[in-house]
Length: 135
Image 1 (cartoon, rainbow, N blue to C red):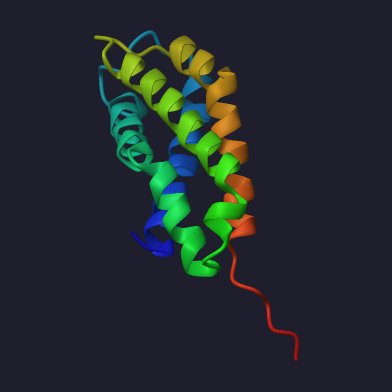
Image 2 (tube, rainbow, N blue to C red; image 1 turned 120 degrees about the vertical axis):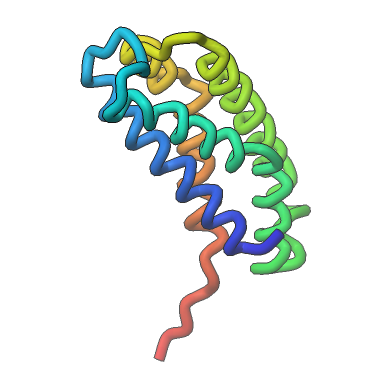
């Protein structure tokens, strides 16, 4: 895994979350019938793929930036892994439903676990940026 892998995962999670915000506002009872309804499962599945192994991907990317970062940030990377696993379980629960309503997605969006994960990813994204060289 590389830092590019982590960036792609973060992008899939953030894009999925943004789509979910729009979907929640539509007042749909089901994801059936085309339009954005048919895309909600696609975005959720993309997030599932991105969340699988996210903690390890973050730790590996940290080692690329600085070999000491995984040890220094060990507890934080463990929290990222835990938050990713909980968010993954919530996504799988939603995907298991025959119909995905806007209300269900709105509740998922409000989940403290998903919000914690997003905040984790903001920290990871900033903390693992390569150092800027001042000219």
